[in-house]
Image (tube, rainbow, N blue to C red):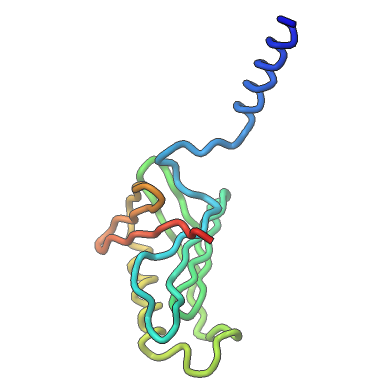
Length: 140
């Protein structure tokens, strides 16, 4: 009986050590993060950031999507984006990507590459740069 208890404890400890744990305050890799801003009417779409464990990221802007490389160390962050394509997404119907949305894409991309720090705040993260941005974890 004692041997079974020790074996069970050892198995549980090994499982906990080998599991990829996410400590509080750790960067939320592989999570869908929504920019905490009102949607630009008439669409409900808001920008989305998703960073993989390998640092490769996609940034879904107001109209277009940018690929990026994200480096996170402690509270420092660096985001490098690939050039943004001038072509609009095929799934956008006519009129969805207005000049205002295209301009907002460019502005957001300029702001996001200027962030230098990040911090966790509950289920959201703040990116800190010349203009702070808050992203919240998607709940769906």
